Length: 356
Image (cartoon, rainbow, N blue to C red; front, side, top):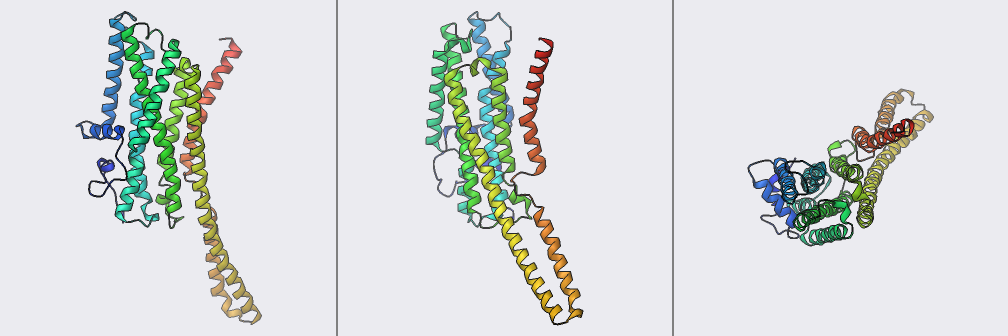
């Protein structure tokens, strides 16, 4: 029986039972956004437009830019807040769907399943608060210690206040998204460890968390590549680069560890299945030898059919994949990883050859 919890209940799954912990301020914000009469993506676009308008009105008022001139840097840098918030929204939404798809492998009561879904889709308030404060402090230090990163948008007091505030909130949302990613990866490993059975022939269970891990990977690749390509001054900011790189490295290690842990668990189930089939084949061969020794030649044909069926079954099981991603999903992710690197390499080659 498939049990699907509606998306809107992702933060309200515990309206009857006790919540494991209070929701974070970000989840309260997302709950409010979901209650609006427009879709969340439209709200995120509206946030971006409001941020871009605020910064442009400020720099126009302060004379930093000629009035009505649109600056590309303002358009790009103000994507961090809506992008990070959108990443959190989609990761939580996808995680809720993944838990529902993985339910057949778990022997959990409704309350326990609701708790598990809550942990996947709602950030703890304390950890989120700590992460966002750290992100804000890092942004504040970076802007104060390296004002050239945001130059000339820090040249007046009002412009510095507006851009510093937005930088702090952008960094806070980035750190919250990092915290969510690390937390969900840990929960994925724990959930697979709690599975009482994994059916190799039920792809919905095996690949339940593939969409979630794929969106994690793609989401953070966009952050890394966008930072390198569009914000080179930010990359040259040593404290920001070192801190962010260290945190993202921890997330990357957790990401790879999670994939290999799931691969190991599925591989163990596959090995047990093959061991059972081989045991049956061994018993069938033993019976074959007994009948041959007893000269029961007429009784060999039915046994041969059994052995052929077992051999076919073993061949099918041997070809079953043990990675938590389908082959097409893995190919898409690798393309997302390699394509920007290839384009960047071609650009460097063209610059070297033609002296551009």
